[in-house]
Image 1: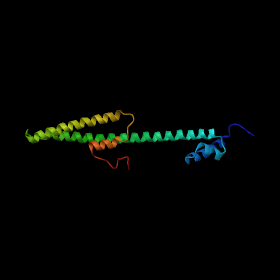
Image 2 (image 1 turned 120 degrees about the vertical axis):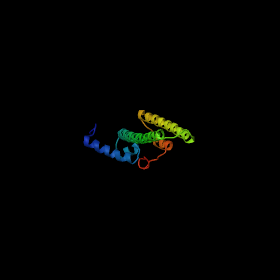
Image 3 (image 1 turned 90 degrees about the horizontal axis):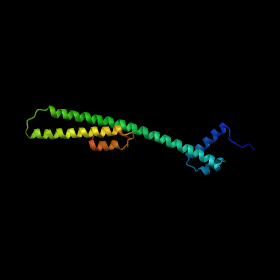
Image 4 (image 1 turned 60 degrees about the horizontal axis):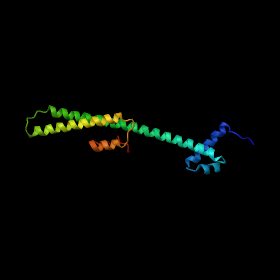
Length: 154
């Protein structure tokens, strides 16, 4: 009886068979008994499949984070542009120092505060290497303007 490592085609077949059992969520012990292989061999293949699955999942998560981060930054740029335009409209309008002028001054102060907050949010998001994908919903809740076409939850 020949002992030792199986040939490359036989190893490929064993790996394919183990993958089939792994994808059916069967235990390594059960797969080993069905395939008539050593349990440790099957366990090593199962660990390899699990590591590959984790790697793919992490890569997908990172891609989703990057896409969400880009989408959030675009929304913040839009909100910053709107805030700047509002500040410009308020400063260019001609009013006297009546009640309307006081209200206009309050609006200007609030617009400047909002613009400052937007800049701070944008800077913190740009500096963050990873991004919680729920931050998009928080920004929509804080600043309004929910976007259904850019939402993650399609």
